Length: 323
Image 1 (cartoon, one colour):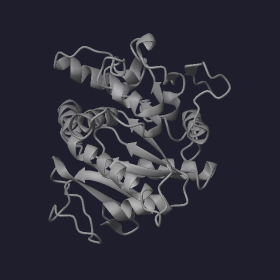
Image 2 (cartoon, rainbow, N blue to C red; image 1 turned 30 degrees about the vertical axis):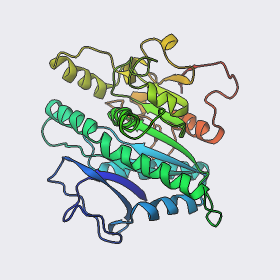
Image 3 (tube, helix red, strand yellow; image 1 turned 180 degrees about the horizontal axis):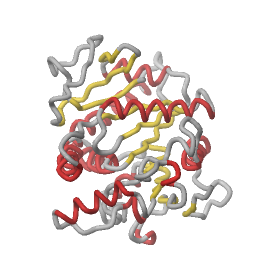
Image 4 (cartoon, rainbow, N blue to C red; image 1 turned 180 degrees about the vertical axis):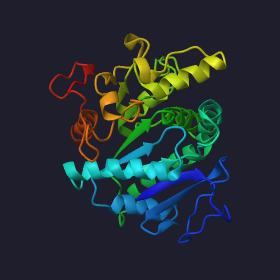
């Protein structure tokens, strides 16, 4: 499995194609560098940016799904979730979707509230290095289009952000827009899935920072559940620091009339705790039985295949998921 990370490796931070890549688990600071790697059965190796992008282009998969994990996830947790999602995709259609985890530095050993604030700072600090990865991809894709001897990369790119991964995505696009782009973010993502999003519920209004997520995407689909216990802890942590705002993953957007027209909402309140008991937070992969797709995954995969959120009704913008 290919992956991108801005976690520090053991040893030198100087990139070296082919070297064994081991995460420095004692260092949870975000690196200013970004590393392009591959997870193998006996560990991970660094493959380098050009080799990484070339392998994506040459893969048999029709689409790419960037998976940005939530807070308090160590690399092994991220790989476990990504492999589960990949296996579910392969079961539906073996050559349709290639899952590529984006691993940013989290901590999970200091208690949830302190841990939460450390991870929130890390999410913000990861924006510069991860925006550099987007710039590298855009530059590589455009250069390949101008080389007649090289096949350009026409694969569709999608992104799935879970929990605090939504904050990473938002801040990455803001940093990319501020430091690297002249005319706003490019239209780069076919589908952007915001699942149990741990950002303020007004974040994707037209006047807010998260609007760039909508600008960069054909479809933006928000999955939320009011009884998501992990987001209740998030809300408590924010209230402790005098930040009073509902989370997007709890209620959906504050006001749908203020969101761009390419935003859709999916209410998962009736199944989230059935799929992920007792927290009701990671309900987007398997259903009642691990390894078998749940209804949220089925909807995600339908969007990936068709490029439409509600193909039977093009003006529809909301759905309630029921067993």
